[in-house]
Length: 384
Image (tube, rainbow, N blue to C red; front, side):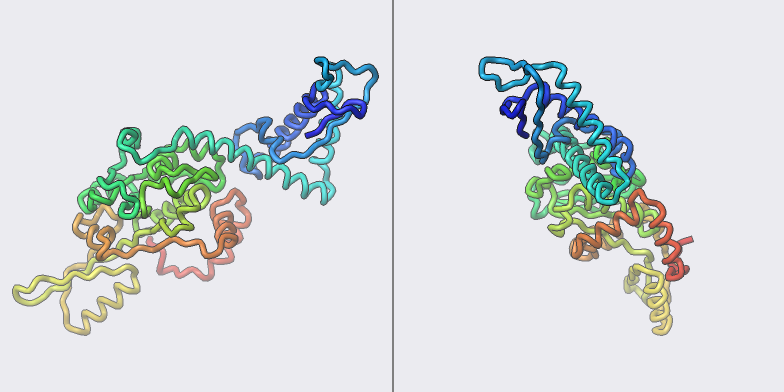
């Protein structure tokens, strides 16, 4: 920013620059509040640094008998100038930002998105300093009480399982290898961070706990090298609610811990849907077969029937909590037998569009998507 009075430079500013700053912040705050829903600004307020970040401006005034402060006359001291400049800037800038002309409208939208992004980054950085955890023994006591941590601190080996509910946690504690597998239970469905402000996200107990436990911060300040675990595995029930919880968690990772996803360190566990116990003749132990879909179960049952194999009544898992510890370990947690799906970002733009469509604040496009896709839905897949 450069300022002048009667063509004389005032490198240290003065009342004319103060009036400019005051009007700029006032107008931008008013416009952000008016468009808070579209901008996902929440209840947070812009401050001066958000408005001035990246700004280039020349403020020049002409007035009779200006009063300067100090011998070098580098600071304008005429008090009345502040209000005059503030009024002019407020009127003219408001006219541009509220104009209905297409070029002005597009520029105004871009400008408001930019200052809101600066505000969110500032808040995220501040909150990150308050919630960031490091992997030291002294700080381990500050981690959430519900975290069942592992003994190892080597990110090359450690795994964090985010588990749906306390019932699954009890079974998972018995099924895990406590040397390198940590467990963090979450209660129900976390906040949809796609349409929530940064402050709301960090104020949500479940989101804050996940960020704190991973220990690498969030947003622009996320530091992949500080992550306490080499793998983060989302372990939810194999039903519609489990899929929804997994989607909400992936939205959190995508928006605020994206480097973790880009590095291929986020996974989804694949628990089985059915347990088929094949009865073997004589003293030979029965054989157990797990299937992961209705179609696979039907094929397996049909194949066993053709081979003349008898089976015990089919066991259908409604949730992870219904499994015994050895079953959960064998199918979902033991690296030697489990199946994991790695979450990848092959197309950032496409992924961003899908997250905004499914999880964003605009209801209309999501409704259209559901209606248009209804014909392609296989009704047999609905678990009712």
